[in-house]
Image (cartoon, rainbow, N blue to C red; front, side, top):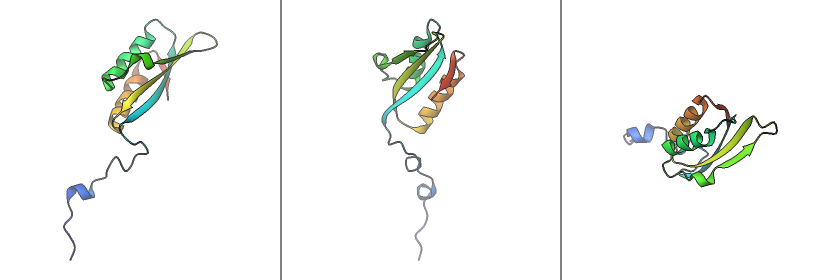
Length: 100
């Protein structure tokens, strides 16, 4: 005799499909134009997706030519959905050229 299937048993578990053990600190690098307000804009986006984001942890690197900035935002990742939304917002920003 087989036991009845429950919807939860048949649904994929996103935690099992991920290599990330949520919640965890997750660094995201964004590179973009060196314009006034770039860092503040990146911090604002990070805080929308992780209200606990600490702006003092922001790492900044200047390009050799001085035209670009690289920032590392370490957010508290709580889900794939959260990270996807954060990546979408960062890549959609007009000053951002690359997000890793």
